[in-house]
Length: 341
Picture 1 (cartoon, helix red, strand yellow):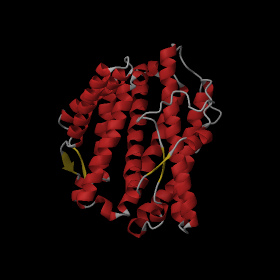
Picture 2 (tube, rainbow, N blue to C red):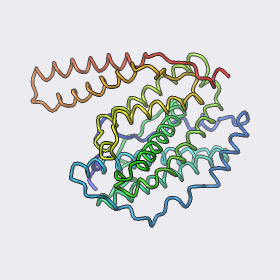
Picture 3 (tube, helix red, strand yellow):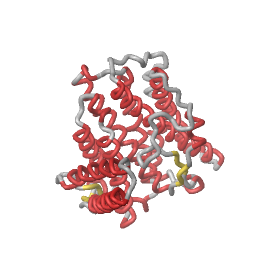
Picture 4 (cartoon, rainbow, N blue to C red):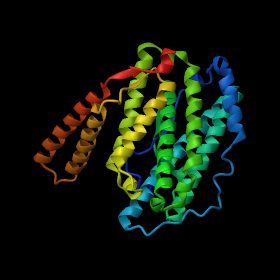
């Protein structure tokens, strides 16, 4: 493998590797959530998806894809594989450090989530091998920088990434069951059990957020909710709409898929966050469309011949992009029913 993984471009949309405040995580007070914690730990121990990810299942059944379609599929596999491996590394390190801090129950819970992430990454890696791509994940993690996040950021962002992952997988699964002619890869047959892992992990992080009541209260809770819903939705929109050929290949409209994922994730987030965006109006999605178009224009301008004209044009587009970001970030939010109960 070369120093840069194939299809893994070094830009803002590239999956990252993370770490956090381990010592603070070790101080998590579970007593207020003891019943929920015990139920979730027992559910993880049961490992309902143990037999779903068959290591002997053939993953190379593809219809005839042209080079562009094949590249779109492989790009999706690489980004997804790295993202799942990133989750595995974070959960495994938390498990190891929590064991050292004499928090065996918490350590076990994170170890079981790491098991699921490793299973997902391994399955995606097998699909890549079937495409003739060998991705050395341990070597890749050693070459890429580790991003440090405060614990509150990790709790909010991982909750959302798991829930948005659930909706991505379940909506693709439902679409392909309704349109089997677009089900060109056996990997998609595993999306239904896969999404249940994502949903379960999201519920665990909802419980962990509730172990820190201050994270959901007052101005801090509202700002955390706004920032992480906005940033996760923005990343999803740019990834899906700007790199939409994979979804077109599935017979899906990338923009409509992105919109439905955001709507469903926003509704789900009411169970965890004090406020969520008001997506009943079209303004948020209209700004999404403008952001995607401007993002594409910035990339196209960067490929033009160097000169003062390109510099000024690029600067104007970046100013426009920043203004659109601010407008979308400032869109109205509504109180969650869960928070008001």
